[in-house]
Length: 107
Image 1: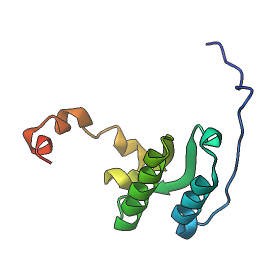
Image 2 (image 1 turned 135 degrees about the vertical axis):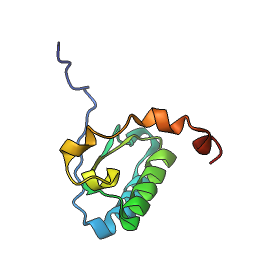
Image 3 (image 1 turned 30 degrees about the vertical axis):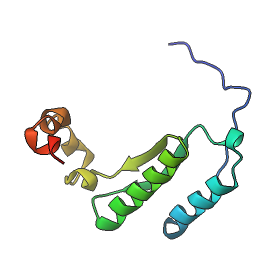
Image 4 (image 1 turned 90 degrees about the horizontal axis):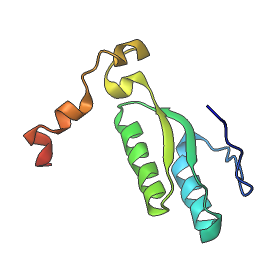
């Protein structure tokens, strides 16, 4: 596979924030960005699990990214899938088989 080169206008910005201030800092960052200076990707180094706090944070971060039309990448802990290790994730059923069920069509 041939590797491409970085775009000439590629800029990497690191925002050191704590988990408790992540949402506020991200909102402030986007509020200060000029429309032509929006990032191409938001990468959050804060894995989420299935706890109510993590799910709420994930929803807020996704909402901020969606409002700014910027993709969001965040890692998910095995607990997000209600398993205890990464190896168990392979044993989970194929998700599209479940979301095609009538129950999900009515949500």
